[in-house]
Image (tube, rainbow, N blue to C red; front, side, top):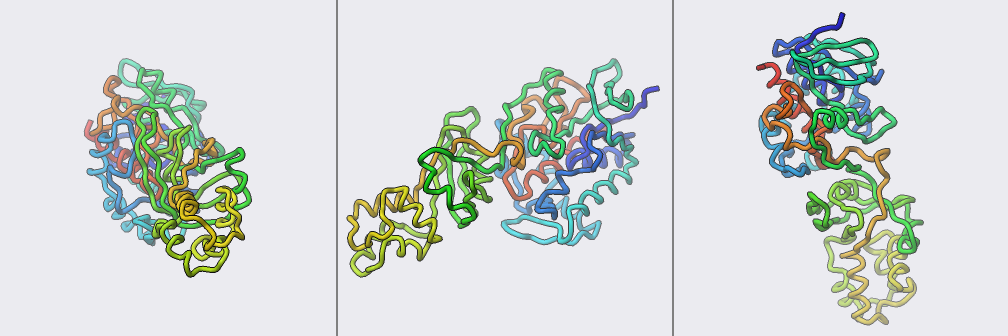
Length: 405
């Protein structure tokens, strides 16, 4: 005999557990399914194992979507302070690390166990590991085919996440279910991901792996559908294959293939004006002058890439050449050839088109009883706890709607 539930939540990650707990505590008989043997692996590895569980500054302005107003309702009804109150209730020690980012003092396992405990309070039934083969609409609700038998439910919540980090079980199941029921999908691609470069233009920089510095990075709106302008001031890291670090992860979500990113390596300084002003009194070689403000290897790489001899004396440089060098440092425009892909991406951009969903309940407008939450949906946050806040908020929105149904 198939088991009958009020709600079946597919995906026991951040959004799925949150939704299941809220619906269960609201009196619904809930079953939570996941194909993984280990619970919430993405939470476990997040924040270097300490889980950057939210950001106290989280608001709609920190999210990308082709329908940017969609996230406002859920985020306003369940805020970072609301989740922080839950963390405090479970006496999880935490700290603010950088720009509003909140981390566990100890381990991300504490957040997983907190969510598991909330599910237990709600009487949630667990099915793990349990692989879902398909979801079908029935006269009274839904039938879910799994490798441990059929499950019947009045409502189904899809919380299966995105395509990022396949080695911990990322799946396209949520997108396939959405497509099956006629919902549109915004094209997916890796987000919060290192960018790669190749070819002659990168030869001078390939040996600079390991160098890090604070920069400003921006990218234009580009020509792609839904393209937006991004601008961040964060740390940059040179890698063997290109660029990484928070600055690049942030801008990668805004970058459109074939378009440049623009780096200001010395955002506090107009390099050209400083160099021109120093010509009369500075006797040092150009490379040594730049090494006062930039890592020496980076200064040399920039000079070589722009046709300057590192041992040339500053006093011998024409103003026009120094302006060219200033541009190369304050406005370095480079076109990435690609990214490190889903294997290194922290999130998936795109997903179920939010215009197909109710912003109050997360239910599909044309499929009563079918909900989509978390990363499966076309709402993607910045680096720094924002994506977890969307998971909590969208999970609560669906959970409350289910509890009231």
